[in-house]
Length: 435
Image (cartoon, rainbow, N blue to C red; front, side, top):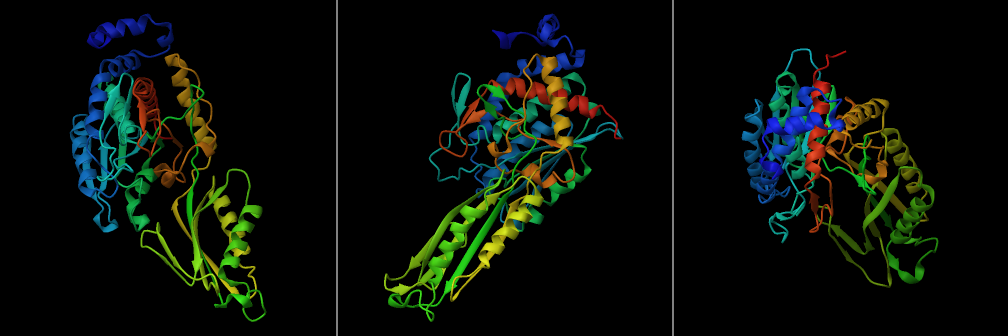
């Protein structure tokens, strides 16, 4: 029955509720609109989820963008599709709304793609009361749905009209295109124009409490190659034969485990092999190894990642890893090469101040304050590419569990509180003038 209440009647109920006493009349309209359009939001989410958009399904990613284009255009956004075929990915949806000249500009970030390609058996939206499963239902089609629910609420209240907004929905967040500087050029440019960045990836909930997130760790990939002299195994460790490539590799990895640990750092070995010959496929996910038990292996390769909370920490860890690699065993050599797919988003006072603004909204909505989330609880994400240029908040999207697995589940009721929070926060920030 509650979905059949008219917006005016919902407005009267909101006025009568002590929890909303601090809200302005326009903000009460936003609350009412989110409630009244809840089922519309769920229906849009179902449509988006049922369109496969695995990162490598270029046509599918574009199809999701096509579904979203009219949603933004109806709200007065200029919408552009930026093809990214030169990075071997589909492209990005960029939507721009011109508000009051001189007003703060907001950057809203989300993504169109999922980790589930067309050959995955996990393809369909299934609803069970307030919960739903499906590919991308939480990450990040749920977040995009909440973004639009908040913008529609602003539109209904008349606050969107005066707000400067850039939306960047990347088509390759789960598997970024290459070269990366081209794949993220539009996002970086939008970050440099913005006064605040809001990331609509999933809401973190711990022990039933919504958490605020002001930091994301980096994602750095390393490849370690060790070489040694080949020969009969009976000569291993001799002056002429040396220790072989596998022992050199093992020395380095053991030293990583002993010497690298520090706060906010994690590191992992994901792929490893050594022998007479080692081949790694072009995607870096499969390794073929050949050798014999009585041959000293001349080649060993290991690949892994490490994650940091600041660029300073990234550079310091790299330097320590290089130092460890350089202390070679007899008759061996080793080299480590780094790739940095995602930079860190360090916790800053500017980000913390934005969380404070969000908690003011929470108080006015009668919601509990959101404590800071431990950065180790979040993975890397697109907002990190703009973190050096603009203050930001993470986690304005859907609450859910089982991300990146066939158990991905969304708590649909989180649409209500997340869209209300976002609409009011964006309206308040957008009404301010640039300093």
